[in-house]
Length: 310
Image (cartoon, rainbow, N blue to C red; front, side, top):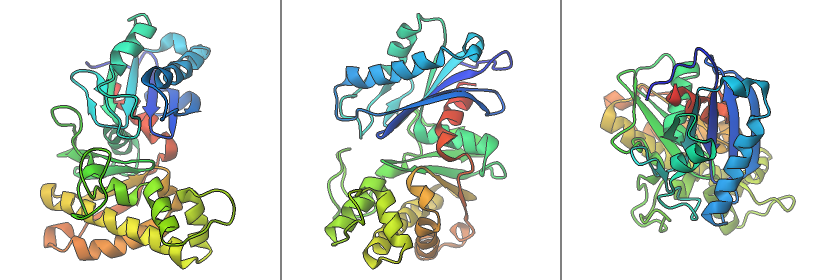
């Protein structure tokens, strides 16, 4: 469904394993109102849904709500855009959960609700407004609680039949790696996500300066020169390089854009990623990849969900 946003903003929701954010997004990508809540990822499906609907309800207090023309939903995957359902790996209470139907019902069926995977949403945002604008063929990634991605091929979003094309986090990069909740083994997400970085650092003997054992705390130690923390980010960069090189070999990319919470570590992640790309992306048509940090920061998912709906 195509939605004309000239007359008003799009309400956007970004669903991840750590947070659920919602915003009213103008056609130029400006956020007119925004709210965020922690994702109760270990709770039942109805509790997760209530968190999402509470965030949407908060937006209705904005004066801009009266002009809303559609709702765009970007969710961690897998998703099924044809059925309007989501099964995020990191939200076990949602399996084939009818998120489109439930949001539509909550809003009285007054607005169209358009679903996209979070990687597709970020690709839409970065291609329209951000770092992927100059490129016709790009992989846009989110590296956070999970690892997702979306593809722009031939200047257009490539979503696939169910909306999961580009879901790079579940490419296997380690044949003997740990089992993944998706059912596979050695998935990129199991090596490069925030929890994976923290898990590996702790396993090798890293100890945080305080009580925080997240990937952000590992980044603080890495910035201070801790060799175990640096090794954890190097491992993540190497895994990302392997997954990116495989994708570039398959579809011939011009650029890769990296966003998400883990990417906020900047060169701690990107420097080893660049170095390892020289090993894994060795064929002539893969060696010229342009690597960029996402320009839209933590709001890329929201801007992209609105862009997909538009």
